[in-house]
Length: 111
Image (cartoon, rainbow, N blue to C red; front, top):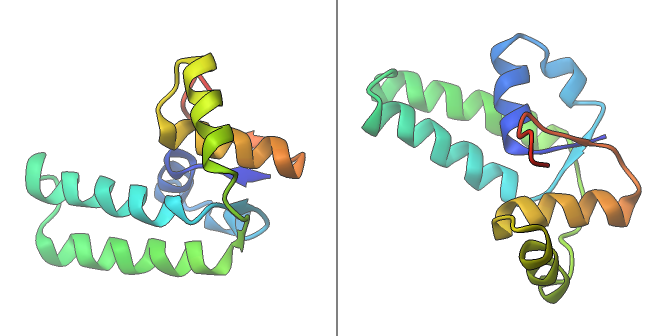
């Protein structure tokens, strides 16, 4: 299974990180998770900076323990994003899942 950032965030929040360790992701997940934590700290004010750092450390540990799938060809990602009307980020996960023949695990209904 290939997990996107939304699935990583939500499974971690639900204490299901063990499931993530059996799967893969792409290098982009680290940055998307980091941006999500930044939003919770700086925009939504749901976490203090210390809580955000703790959450990010925990999620970084999970992500680095997962398998890492090589990123897809950027041209193919752009074509997929255009054809499917997706962000480049979302198309990156979709292309990686297609290339590895893995199920894409996401909480994004469009994907």
